[in-house]
Each structure stands twice: as C-alpha cells, then as structure tokens.
Length: 201
Ligand code: IMP
Image: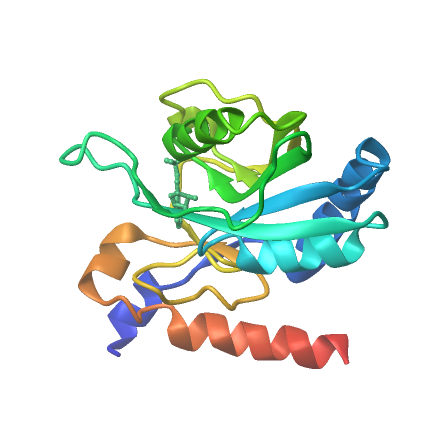
C-alpha cells in the first residue's frame, strides 16, 4: 500500500474492546432482570454473531438461541426477504431480536412483524449500535448499546465485503477508501487488535 493510501486508511476507534465489554455487561444485566424465566434470543446473521455470543454468556438466566437471515433492503429490491427462518417455535415465549446495528430500521421492522405473526408472548429488540440519524421506519429499541453517527463502521460483527467481522473493536471507516481497496484497513486494524490482545494479557 502507498503511504498516501495508508494515511487515508487511518481508522477512528468508535468503541474499544473494553467499551464493548461494558455495554454487553449492562445489556445482559438488563435482559436478565427482565426475563427471569428465560427468553429466546434471535441473532440476525451474520453481523450479530460476536455480540450475541458475548451477550448470552453474560446473561444469568436460561436462554435459547436461534438465528434468522434476511436479504438486505436495496432500492432495487424494494423489500426485505427471509433467507433463513427460525428452527425454534416461539409461540408463547419471550423473543428478543439481536442486531449488530439498527440503521434504516427496515430489517428490524421486517423481522419484528415476521416474528409477531408467530404469537410469541413478547418481541423485543436488542442492538449493539443505533444509528438513529439514518432511520427510515420507526423502530422501538428495548435494549440499546451505543448510538453512532452517520459514518460507516466495521468490526465486532460489522463487515465490509465479509472482512473485519472478527475485530474486537469497532472503527469508523471511509467508504471511498474501502471501495478502492476492501483490505485497506486490514494492516492497521489487525495490528491494533493484536496490540489490544497483548495489552489485555
Ligand atoms: P438496516 O436495515 O438499514 O437497519 O440495517 C441492516 C443491516 O445493515 C445491519 O444489520 C448491518 O448488517 C448492515 N449495516 C448497516 N450499517 C452498517 C455499517 O455501518 N457497517 C456494516 N454494516 C452495516
């Protein structure tokens, strides 16, 4: 990578690994208090996986885990479609949709109405990140981690073309830099990942 490209690919840390841990602990405590009889946590593939994995392990009540996958909304498709359905029956149970980020809200609104039809006792939404400035449809969020500004973010489940999901932190990335080179942030972000691992040990 040229020195100019490396400068352009200077990411800004939005949430450090320690800040994510604090958010997970807070949300897990709130959810454990709300669902003393347990709940079904429904991860939206694939971005919610690291968050869901940490969340369920920090919860102190019995939970079941299932997954759904949907096609993202695009102006061309005009709608969201279900790609993978639940395996569990949620009728009469408390269900929680677990998202990496609620952005336009179109995915979450679709999932909530889809789940509501299955007659659960309740459906709630838990998201690590909330980008309210981009909301297109209103979404009630029951458990919210952190609000983020209108910048593209990567890490801790959030990807760009499948990359960066396994970072322990979340960083703001320049979409033009990523469009030119999807790997533009690999060197600097995985370097900082290694450094934070070393710092933690
Ligand atoms: P929404 O339907 O617009 O609310 O967003 C749905 C999905 O878009 C999220 O669950 C993410 O997987 C993805 N997404 C939205 N914003 C970002 C981002 O900044 N980085 C990576 N993925 C994103």
